[in-house]
Amino acid sequence: MENTAKQHAEHQATVIRLNETVVNQIAAGEVIERPASVIKELVENAIDAGADRIEVTTANGGKTLMRVSDNGHGMTPEDLTLAVERHCTSKLTDDLMDIRSLGFRGEALPSIGSVSRLSITSRREEDQNAWKITVHGGRVEGPTPAALSRGTVVEVSDLFYATPARLKFLKSDQAETNAITDVFKRMALAFPAVRFSISGGDRSTLEYAATDINGRLEQVLGKAFRENAIEVDAGREGVSLSGLASVPTFHRGNALAQYFFVNGRPVRDKALLGAVRGAYMDHLPSGRHPTLALFLDLDPYLVDVNVHPAKADVRFRDPGLVRGLIVGALKQALSEQGPLTSRAGADAMMDAFRPEQRSNWRPEQQTGFSDWARPLNEKQAEANFSGLAESQSNYQNDFQPSGQVETVAENHESLTDYPLGSARAQVHENYIVAQTEKGLVIVDQHAAHERIVYEKLKAGMRDGLPSQLLLVPEIVDLPEEDVNRLASHSEGFEKLGLELEAFGPGAIAVRGTPAMLGETDVQQLLRDLADEVAEWGSADGLQEKLEHVAATMACHGSVRSGRILKAPEMNALLRQIETTPNSGQCNHGRPTFIELDLKDIERLFGR
Image (tube, rainbow, N blue to C red):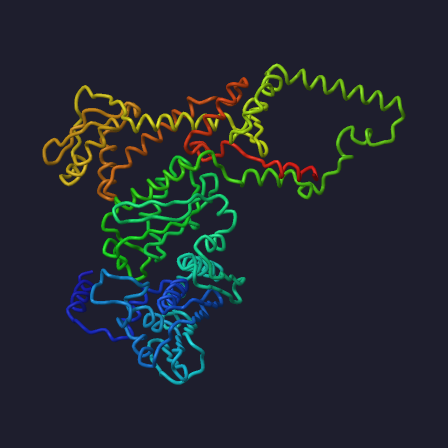
């Protein structure tokens, strides 16, 4: 053990200069994590070169081949030579904070060339011919004359052949192909005016024609997303936010379909993902995620994109401002949408009823159907008709005790002008069937009333919540910096029922807690809030905790399934749904109603 430590110390005592190849390979470890990283860097270079057409080709998940062709400005032989040297770039001034391009570090091409076989062929429009340069494991050859029309073609083959140990860390060809596709889609969303295509033996071809942002969103995320998305448009203190976000009932099992862009740069930032989770917290079931594309625009001096060589992470000067903007804008957009739910439920219902979905069903297999289908003599027909009439009478008698059919249909024709129409019946003592001007609506009475009660509770929270005073103030020991953070938010906490004040340099005195929380662990609550303020610059955690309690109270205090409602009660519930924010889904993310258009119903009957 001592000998090992001594040898290590002796080795550390010698300082050497690493050769250029090793330096580039070390840099490649940060910039080029997998084939998708290569595609990202090369597509960014093409966009910075002014290309409006970019073609990507891959093989074996990018492990054996990646080719990116563009019609950008092209490069001279001198530019090519410098492009494969570290820290050479045409995209950066002396001000490292004033970054207005996608690339700026000058590390991508030399890093790629140090671990693969790289060739770059490029031609400017005014030049007589193209030029080609190659880099194999860090060894540069060229430039030499070549044939190419205007633009640049970058080809990368045998990725990590110079560092074979890193090949073991790559995933399957399909997994790497999927990662490349994800990067490709993010770049395509960021630049809708550019025509993108990707092809290869390891994938099906994807082509995105040049369009506007709405058209590109439909190309990449699908028509279903556009039909189930709401617009987001907000701004605060020089930061603007725009884009589309799905209604809560249109969700997925992971967050891969969440796209964020900061000044046009695709990013995968944990702070932005966390803000989205906070905004949708009381709208989605556990483990489900919305689909969205959000675009943040702000002064380059307010965001640092130089946090990591891969440039996927960013750091905002005021993270609390950005988080608050995203959470507030999404919540406002969701609350202003009115009674809106995803078409997914209605489409699933229509699919279940369509004849092609029941191709194995035979009517003669049903009990009694074959007897009715046979030719009848007059007496048989009369007897069967009498039996049908008696059966229908029994059905009506069985249905009438709840009083819906007779009462609901009376004097409510004008109510069909409302978005959710006029209640016509209650079935299975939980579902309200309402007629609208354009079709019908089926409402889950418990889920709908749960949302109504919850929104009323939240409104009460905004007006101020009562505090439960402690007989003896509880003293919580915290680091001095946490005490200062919490004390600076004491006014906001007081509105939520939490009364606290600094108690010396290293402690907080808690005199009252939110009555809604009941018995609570004050020590843990304060520590959690201090951590949140330290990380985000805000204290939304208490608000979220209270909203979770409010959601539980709403669930227990709403109209229960199995309760028979009279016509006025059903119509009153429909009117409340229409005026309640976020009423398209309950607090757990389930839809509160499904709407069927009359044309869809008519198609079921071949009309």
